[in-house]
Length: 243
Image (cartoon, rainbow, N blue to C red; front, top):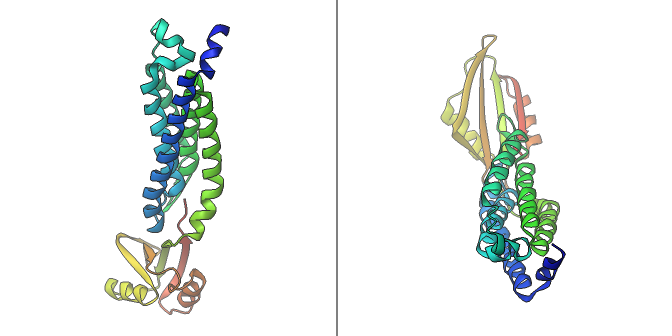
């Protein structure tokens, strides 16, 4: 085993790590690009989640192309194939990731944590097969993406989403009138998000509002003041959707 250490510093091995590293960085950037579209439209999964998942998927596929260099070159001599073990590991980690995702109404939390767990397992795979520089690079990039991308996402233009619940004292208003009122305040009412319940002889509507223009949309505080002054509204809640 000690004799195989020289392979970790050979030109071919370092070139393979550099190639893997470039693929990881490129996958992160492309995943962030796709994730920004979701983040801009107020969806739960954003730049960090998409970037981490795309980079992890790349890590788990690109290392297969360097099979002769696995375990410092020992895999080529002994016919070792870790891909079956990797499949089992990733399946188990997938169940673990599902356990940290929590949904409360339209709010979804834990997506980035789940993606980071999956990324951590991909880092472990790279370490296990001996691609130490690539594993170190992926760990650093993951840490930076989770800490810095959140600040970047908050500064980039995006459409805020609100989870609104209205309980009416009597008959609720016309749906089209409610949609027009939301549009006048800079929001689009998502028609497929409407749920209607009836309790204590009072109808309750729950729906999503998406800001059409971030700078021109009324703030949640302004909406709350207006709803509090509305005669037919018995109770209401306004919750910004977050991931």
